[in-house]
Image: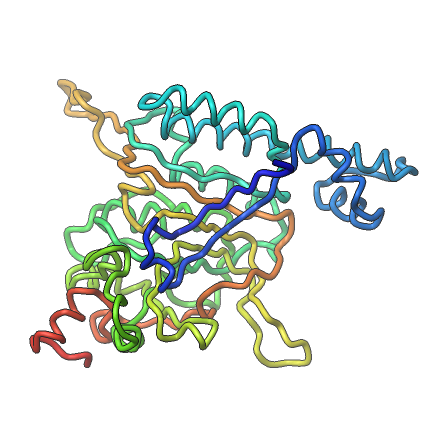
Length: 387
Protein backbone atom coordinates (compact mmCIF):
# COMPACT_ATOMS: atom_id res chain seq x y z
CA UNK A 1 0.00 0.00 0.00
CA UNK A 2 1.11 3.57 -0.62
CA UNK A 3 0.39 4.63 2.94
CA UNK A 4 -0.30 3.31 6.43
CA UNK A 5 -3.21 4.72 8.40
CA UNK A 6 -2.86 4.58 12.16
CA UNK A 7 -6.12 5.09 14.05
CA UNK A 8 -6.39 5.37 17.85
CA UNK A 9 -9.89 5.51 19.25
CA UNK A 10 -11.90 5.45 22.46
CA UNK A 11 -14.33 3.00 20.84
CA UNK A 12 -14.61 -0.66 21.72
CA UNK A 13 -14.92 -3.23 18.97
CA UNK A 14 -18.70 -3.49 18.97
CA UNK A 15 -21.62 -2.22 16.92
CA UNK A 16 -22.99 -0.34 19.92
CA UNK A 17 -20.07 2.08 19.80
CA UNK A 18 -21.41 3.45 16.51
CA UNK A 19 -24.39 4.77 18.49
CA UNK A 20 -22.50 6.73 21.13
CA UNK A 21 -19.94 9.54 21.22
CA UNK A 22 -16.37 8.38 20.64
CA UNK A 23 -13.25 10.15 19.43
CA UNK A 24 -10.78 8.93 16.81
CA UNK A 25 -7.28 10.21 16.03
CA UNK A 26 -5.99 9.11 12.63
CA UNK A 27 -2.76 9.82 10.80
CA UNK A 28 -1.55 8.61 7.39
CA UNK A 29 2.12 7.73 6.95
CA UNK A 30 3.76 7.42 3.53
CA UNK A 31 6.23 4.69 2.67
CA UNK A 32 9.73 5.56 3.81
CA UNK A 33 10.99 5.43 0.23
CA UNK A 34 8.38 8.00 -0.82
CA UNK A 35 8.92 10.47 2.03
CA UNK A 36 10.99 13.01 0.09
CA UNK A 37 8.72 12.83 -2.94
CA UNK A 38 5.68 13.42 -0.71
CA UNK A 39 7.36 16.46 0.84
CA UNK A 40 8.16 17.83 -2.62
CA UNK A 41 4.44 17.75 -3.41
CA UNK A 42 3.94 20.53 -0.85
CA UNK A 43 4.18 24.17 -1.85
CA UNK A 44 7.20 26.25 -0.88
CA UNK A 45 5.16 28.23 1.65
CA UNK A 46 3.92 24.98 3.24
CA UNK A 47 7.45 23.61 3.46
CA UNK A 48 8.75 26.78 5.09
CA UNK A 49 5.79 26.93 7.50
CA UNK A 50 6.34 23.39 8.76
CA UNK A 51 10.09 23.88 9.02
CA UNK A 52 9.43 26.97 11.12
CA UNK A 53 6.97 25.03 13.29
CA UNK A 54 9.66 22.39 13.84
CA UNK A 55 12.17 25.11 14.79
CA UNK A 56 14.37 24.53 11.72
CA UNK A 57 16.14 27.51 10.17
CA UNK A 58 15.59 27.31 6.40
CA UNK A 59 17.09 30.70 5.58
CA UNK A 60 19.92 29.17 3.57
CA UNK A 61 17.67 26.94 1.48
CA UNK A 62 16.83 28.42 -1.93
CA UNK A 63 15.60 25.35 -3.82
CA UNK A 64 12.30 23.56 -3.18
CA UNK A 65 14.04 20.16 -3.34
CA UNK A 66 16.43 21.25 -0.60
CA UNK A 67 13.55 22.46 1.57
CA UNK A 68 11.78 19.11 1.12
CA UNK A 69 14.86 17.11 2.10
CA UNK A 70 15.43 19.36 5.13
CA UNK A 71 11.81 18.84 6.20
CA UNK A 72 12.02 15.05 5.92
CA UNK A 73 15.16 15.13 8.07
CA UNK A 74 13.43 17.33 10.64
CA UNK A 75 10.33 15.13 10.72
CA UNK A 76 12.39 12.01 11.31
CA UNK A 77 14.49 13.64 14.01
CA UNK A 78 11.41 14.93 15.84
CA UNK A 79 9.45 11.68 15.53
CA UNK A 80 12.07 9.06 16.36
CA UNK A 81 10.49 8.61 19.78
CA UNK A 82 6.99 8.17 18.34
CA UNK A 83 8.02 5.33 16.02
CA UNK A 84 10.08 3.62 18.74
CA UNK A 85 7.20 3.89 21.24
CA UNK A 86 4.71 2.48 18.74
CA UNK A 87 6.90 -0.54 18.04
CA UNK A 88 7.57 -1.03 21.76
CA UNK A 89 3.84 -0.92 22.56
CA UNK A 90 3.06 -3.49 19.85
CA UNK A 91 5.82 -5.70 21.25
CA UNK A 92 4.34 -5.46 24.76
CA UNK A 93 0.90 -6.19 23.34
CA UNK A 94 1.66 -9.28 21.23
CA UNK A 95 5.39 -10.06 21.48
CA UNK A 96 5.25 -12.82 24.08
CA UNK A 97 1.95 -14.38 23.08
CA UNK A 98 2.50 -14.25 19.32
CA UNK A 99 6.16 -13.58 18.41
CA UNK A 100 5.61 -14.30 14.73
CA UNK A 101 2.78 -11.75 14.64
CA UNK A 102 5.07 -9.18 16.25
CA UNK A 103 7.73 -9.81 13.60
CA UNK A 104 5.11 -9.13 10.94
CA UNK A 105 4.18 -5.86 12.65
CA UNK A 106 7.85 -4.94 12.96
CA UNK A 107 8.40 -5.53 9.24
CA UNK A 108 5.26 -3.59 8.37
CA UNK A 109 6.10 -0.54 10.48
CA UNK A 110 9.67 -0.45 9.17
CA UNK A 111 8.38 0.23 5.65
CA UNK A 112 6.70 3.52 6.58
CA UNK A 113 7.87 6.98 7.59
CA UNK A 114 6.32 7.22 11.06
CA UNK A 115 6.43 11.00 11.30
CA UNK A 116 3.22 12.51 12.76
CA UNK A 117 2.62 16.27 13.09
CA UNK A 118 5.02 18.21 15.29
CA UNK A 119 4.50 17.62 19.00
CA UNK A 120 2.67 14.28 18.69
CA UNK A 121 3.58 11.69 21.33
CA UNK A 122 2.29 8.19 22.00
CA UNK A 123 1.00 7.64 25.55
CA UNK A 124 0.55 3.97 26.40
CA UNK A 125 0.11 1.61 29.32
CA UNK A 126 0.98 -2.06 29.67
CA UNK A 127 0.51 -4.33 32.69
CA UNK A 128 3.49 -4.62 35.00
CA UNK A 129 5.37 -3.29 38.01
CA UNK A 130 7.99 -0.68 37.17
CA UNK A 131 10.60 1.41 38.93
CA UNK A 132 13.28 3.91 38.00
CA UNK A 133 13.56 5.15 34.40
CA UNK A 134 11.46 2.24 33.13
CA UNK A 135 8.39 3.64 34.90
CA UNK A 136 8.69 6.88 32.90
CA UNK A 137 7.56 5.06 29.75
CA UNK A 138 4.02 4.38 30.95
CA UNK A 139 0.72 6.06 31.69
CA UNK A 140 0.64 9.22 33.76
CA UNK A 141 4.43 9.15 34.24
CA UNK A 142 4.94 9.40 30.45
CA UNK A 143 2.28 12.09 30.20
CA UNK A 144 3.94 14.18 32.88
CA UNK A 145 7.37 13.71 31.29
CA UNK A 146 6.17 15.14 27.97
CA UNK A 147 4.20 18.01 29.54
CA UNK A 148 7.27 19.29 31.42
CA UNK A 149 8.26 21.32 28.34
CA UNK A 150 5.35 23.66 29.07
CA UNK A 151 7.20 25.12 32.06
CA UNK A 152 9.74 26.68 29.69
CA UNK A 153 7.11 28.42 27.56
CA UNK A 154 5.83 31.98 28.00
CA UNK A 155 2.99 32.29 30.49
CA UNK A 156 0.61 33.31 27.69
CA UNK A 157 1.17 29.93 26.01
CA UNK A 158 0.61 27.76 29.06
CA UNK A 159 -2.72 26.20 30.05
CA UNK A 160 -4.75 27.88 32.76
CA UNK A 161 -7.17 24.97 33.22
CA UNK A 162 -7.48 21.30 32.36
CA UNK A 163 -10.68 19.48 31.42
CA UNK A 164 -10.86 15.69 31.19
CA UNK A 165 -13.80 13.67 29.90
CA UNK A 166 -13.96 9.91 30.35
CA UNK A 167 -16.53 7.14 30.67
CA UNK A 168 -15.44 5.13 33.70
CA UNK A 169 -14.04 5.83 37.15
CA UNK A 170 -11.78 3.55 39.18
CA UNK A 171 -10.54 3.82 42.77
CA UNK A 172 -10.24 7.58 42.98
CA UNK A 173 -7.81 7.83 45.88
CA UNK A 174 -5.30 5.98 43.65
CA UNK A 175 -5.55 8.41 40.75
CA UNK A 176 -7.44 11.61 41.55
CA UNK A 177 -4.51 13.46 43.11
CA UNK A 178 -1.72 11.93 40.98
CA UNK A 179 -3.57 12.78 37.75
CA UNK A 180 -5.85 15.77 38.41
CA UNK A 181 -4.08 17.20 41.45
CA UNK A 182 -7.31 17.07 43.49
CA UNK A 183 -7.22 15.54 46.95
CA UNK A 184 -10.23 13.26 47.50
CA UNK A 185 -12.80 14.98 49.69
CA UNK A 186 -13.11 12.62 52.64
CA UNK A 187 -11.37 12.44 56.01
CA UNK A 188 -9.38 9.26 55.42
CA UNK A 189 -8.02 10.34 52.02
CA UNK A 190 -4.29 9.66 51.77
CA UNK A 191 -2.01 12.66 51.53
CA UNK A 192 0.32 12.50 48.56
CA UNK A 193 3.19 14.82 47.77
CA UNK A 194 2.34 14.52 44.08
CA UNK A 195 1.35 17.29 41.70
CA UNK A 196 -1.28 16.09 39.25
CA UNK A 197 0.27 14.97 35.96
CA UNK A 198 -2.37 16.91 34.01
CA UNK A 199 -1.32 20.07 35.84
CA UNK A 200 2.30 19.91 34.69
CA UNK A 201 3.26 23.29 33.24
CA UNK A 202 -0.08 24.86 34.17
CA UNK A 203 -0.30 28.57 35.01
CA UNK A 204 -3.28 29.34 37.20
CA UNK A 205 -3.99 33.09 37.43
CA UNK A 206 -4.36 34.27 41.06
CA UNK A 207 -7.92 35.54 40.51
CA UNK A 208 -9.19 32.14 39.27
CA UNK A 209 -10.98 30.22 42.01
CA UNK A 210 -11.74 26.52 42.28
CA UNK A 211 -9.94 23.44 41.02
CA UNK A 212 -7.58 23.87 38.07
CA UNK A 213 -8.58 20.45 36.72
CA UNK A 214 -12.16 19.46 36.00
CA UNK A 215 -13.61 16.01 35.46
CA UNK A 216 -16.15 16.55 32.66
CA UNK A 217 -19.05 14.19 33.32
CA UNK A 218 -22.73 14.46 32.30
CA UNK A 219 -25.48 14.91 34.83
CA UNK A 220 -28.23 12.32 35.06
CA UNK A 221 -30.81 14.79 33.72
CA UNK A 222 -28.69 15.66 30.70
CA UNK A 223 -28.11 11.98 29.84
CA UNK A 224 -31.63 10.59 30.22
CA UNK A 225 -32.79 11.68 26.71
CA UNK A 226 -30.22 9.29 25.24
CA UNK A 227 -32.18 6.40 26.68
CA UNK A 228 -35.39 7.55 25.02
CA UNK A 229 -34.08 7.00 21.51
CA UNK A 230 -34.96 3.35 21.21
CA UNK A 231 -33.36 -0.06 21.14
CA UNK A 232 -29.71 -0.49 21.92
CA UNK A 233 -28.92 2.68 23.84
CA UNK A 234 -28.27 0.84 27.09
CA UNK A 235 -25.44 -1.05 25.41
CA UNK A 236 -22.93 1.69 26.12
CA UNK A 237 -19.65 -0.16 26.24
CA UNK A 238 -21.34 -3.51 25.77
CA UNK A 239 -23.13 -3.75 29.10
CA UNK A 240 -24.59 -2.05 32.10
CA UNK A 241 -21.32 -1.07 33.74
CA UNK A 242 -19.29 0.78 31.09
CA UNK A 243 -20.19 4.38 31.80
CA UNK A 244 -20.43 3.33 35.40
CA UNK A 245 -20.75 6.75 36.95
CA UNK A 246 -19.75 7.76 40.45
CA UNK A 247 -21.41 6.22 43.48
CA UNK A 248 -22.57 8.44 46.34
CA UNK A 249 -19.18 7.95 48.02
CA UNK A 250 -17.27 8.80 44.84
CA UNK A 251 -19.48 11.86 44.35
CA UNK A 252 -18.25 13.08 47.73
CA UNK A 253 -14.65 12.52 46.59
CA UNK A 254 -15.29 14.43 43.35
CA UNK A 255 -17.08 17.36 44.92
CA UNK A 256 -14.29 19.83 44.12
CA UNK A 257 -13.78 19.01 40.46
CA UNK A 258 -16.94 17.85 38.62
CA UNK A 259 -18.14 19.79 35.56
CA UNK A 260 -20.98 19.35 33.09
CA UNK A 261 -20.44 17.37 29.90
CA UNK A 262 -22.71 19.12 27.42
CA UNK A 263 -22.27 18.08 23.79
CA UNK A 264 -20.69 20.85 21.73
CA UNK A 265 -22.78 19.76 18.75
CA UNK A 266 -26.50 19.98 19.63
CA UNK A 267 -27.19 17.04 17.31
CA UNK A 268 -25.32 14.83 19.78
CA UNK A 269 -27.12 16.08 22.86
CA UNK A 270 -29.19 12.88 23.08
CA UNK A 271 -26.31 10.42 22.75
CA UNK A 272 -24.20 8.86 25.47
CA UNK A 273 -20.57 9.82 26.00
CA UNK A 274 -17.68 7.41 25.62
CA UNK A 275 -14.76 9.75 24.84
CA UNK A 276 -11.49 9.72 26.75
CA UNK A 277 -10.04 13.15 26.11
CA UNK A 278 -8.24 15.82 28.09
CA UNK A 279 -7.32 19.36 27.14
CA UNK A 280 -4.89 21.87 28.60
CA UNK A 281 -6.87 25.01 27.86
CA UNK A 282 -5.09 28.33 27.45
CA UNK A 283 -8.28 30.25 26.73
CA UNK A 284 -11.86 28.93 26.64
CA UNK A 285 -14.04 29.47 23.62
CA UNK A 286 -14.97 33.15 23.34
CA UNK A 287 -18.54 33.36 22.06
CA UNK A 288 -18.79 37.14 22.02
CA UNK A 289 -16.60 39.96 20.79
CA UNK A 290 -15.57 41.05 17.32
CA UNK A 291 -13.80 37.79 16.41
CA UNK A 292 -15.98 34.71 16.30
CA UNK A 293 -14.02 31.74 17.61
CA UNK A 294 -14.98 28.19 16.75
CA UNK A 295 -12.76 26.27 19.19
CA UNK A 296 -10.93 26.85 22.49
CA UNK A 297 -7.21 27.64 22.40
CA UNK A 298 -5.32 24.66 23.82
CA UNK A 299 -1.68 24.05 24.73
CA UNK A 300 -2.25 20.30 24.47
CA UNK A 301 -4.87 17.62 23.94
CA UNK A 302 -4.84 13.95 24.92
CA UNK A 303 -7.09 11.48 23.07
CA UNK A 304 -7.08 7.74 23.59
CA UNK A 305 -8.43 4.87 25.67
CA UNK A 306 -7.39 5.83 29.23
CA UNK A 307 -10.26 6.14 31.69
CA UNK A 308 -9.85 7.69 35.15
CA UNK A 309 -8.34 4.72 36.98
CA UNK A 310 -5.09 3.53 38.43
CA UNK A 311 -5.42 0.39 36.32
CA UNK A 312 -5.23 2.50 33.17
CA UNK A 313 -2.92 5.39 34.10
CA UNK A 314 -0.84 3.56 36.72
CA UNK A 315 -0.49 4.06 40.46
CA UNK A 316 2.13 3.78 43.18
CA UNK A 317 2.19 0.69 45.40
CA UNK A 318 4.61 -0.77 47.91
CA UNK A 319 7.16 -2.93 46.14
CA UNK A 320 6.78 -6.64 46.74
CA UNK A 321 8.97 -7.73 49.66
CA UNK A 322 10.34 -4.23 50.20
CA UNK A 323 9.43 -3.91 53.89
CA UNK A 324 12.71 -4.00 55.82
CA UNK A 325 13.44 -3.96 59.55
CA UNK A 326 13.11 -0.17 59.69
CA UNK A 327 9.54 -0.39 58.40
CA UNK A 328 10.39 1.60 55.27
CA UNK A 329 8.88 0.45 52.00
CA UNK A 330 10.07 1.00 48.47
CA UNK A 331 7.41 1.87 45.92
CA UNK A 332 6.74 0.68 42.42
CA UNK A 333 4.63 2.10 39.63
CA UNK A 334 1.91 -0.44 38.88
CA UNK A 335 -0.14 -0.63 35.66
CA UNK A 336 -2.90 -3.19 35.16
CA UNK A 337 -4.27 -2.72 31.64
CA UNK A 338 -3.26 -2.08 28.05
CA UNK A 339 -4.16 1.44 26.93
CA UNK A 340 -2.98 3.74 24.17
CA UNK A 341 -3.54 7.35 23.18
CA UNK A 342 -1.85 10.35 21.63
CA UNK A 343 -0.71 13.56 23.24
CA UNK A 344 -0.94 16.48 20.82
CA UNK A 345 1.51 19.06 22.15
CA UNK A 346 2.12 21.55 19.32
CA UNK A 347 5.01 24.03 19.55
CA UNK A 348 2.46 26.81 20.15
CA UNK A 349 -1.16 26.75 21.38
CA UNK A 350 -3.80 26.26 18.71
CA UNK A 351 -7.57 25.90 18.54
CA UNK A 352 -8.83 22.34 19.08
CA UNK A 353 -12.49 21.42 18.64
CA UNK A 354 -13.55 19.52 21.78
CA UNK A 355 -16.69 17.35 21.92
CA UNK A 356 -18.02 19.14 25.01
CA UNK A 357 -18.89 22.78 25.72
CA UNK A 358 -15.97 24.57 27.34
CA UNK A 359 -15.35 26.16 29.73
CA UNK A 360 -17.22 23.27 31.36
CA UNK A 361 -19.53 24.56 34.07
CA UNK A 362 -18.77 23.06 37.51
CA UNK A 363 -21.43 21.33 39.58
CA UNK A 364 -21.63 19.68 42.98
CA UNK A 365 -22.24 15.93 42.44
CA UNK A 366 -23.66 15.60 45.93
CA UNK A 367 -26.47 17.96 44.90
CA UNK A 368 -26.78 17.45 41.12
CA UNK A 369 -26.86 13.73 40.37
CA UNK A 370 -24.15 12.60 37.93
CA UNK A 371 -25.11 10.06 35.31
CA UNK A 372 -24.56 6.41 36.14
CA UNK A 373 -26.15 3.28 34.75
CA UNK A 374 -27.11 2.14 38.25
CA UNK A 375 -29.02 5.40 38.85
CA UNK A 376 -30.78 5.02 35.51
CA UNK A 377 -31.80 1.44 36.31
CA UNK A 378 -33.00 2.57 39.75
CA UNK A 379 -35.29 5.11 38.05
CA UNK A 380 -36.67 2.40 35.76
CA UNK A 381 -37.39 0.25 38.78
CA UNK A 382 -39.03 3.07 40.69
CA UNK A 383 -36.32 3.27 43.34
CA UNK A 384 -34.94 6.68 42.44
CA UNK A 385 -35.81 9.90 40.64
CA UNK A 386 -33.88 12.20 38.36
CA UNK A 387 -34.13 15.06 40.87
